Length: 229
Image 1 (cartoon, helix red, strand yellow):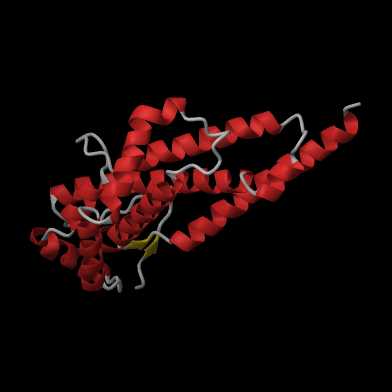
Image 2: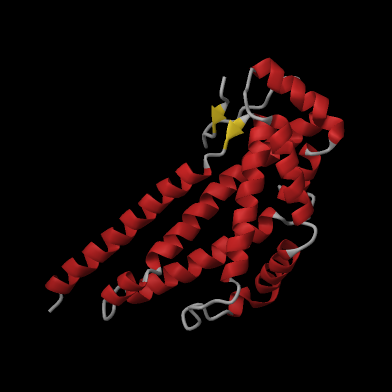
């Protein structure tokens, strides 16, 4: 058995795992849902920020609305990204999830769940990869990038002029932290819930949806231009 594909309407919790791992499994599922929303927000922002699209909207009556949408999208994406690593005990906290899963005290419980399910995911290999991600979240680039995002959220977000500063200095930090969150969630899903988070498939799906919405806006703007005297 190759494992399960991640489905947004179904939570599979393996039988026989410890109560602590069950709590982590529920938190991981919530984080996975939030990451799909985050990916959708980011891809829609990217679609509506394409230079060719913005040039085609120049002078259009919907340009102001597009600017508002873009500002809202990137604000929400930044807020969600920071929240996913928030150390508040009430948050899902991806770092806490990953640290718990890689705790060797839970190894036997997770391994037994894999054996019962007949799943072929490479548990040991994925655990090693997740341990590397845990270490990288404590030192190196991630703490610096996350610290910058947290500062923007806490002190600048409400006052940041997104429209007149298209080259937002925190965008690279946002992208880096998003990728880190997606990779941690993918590995955690494979190890604990024995399912693939299917990152590339999800990215392609939300990108198609974002581009479809962008094209619909563009078509509607062109039609309005023909009607408006």
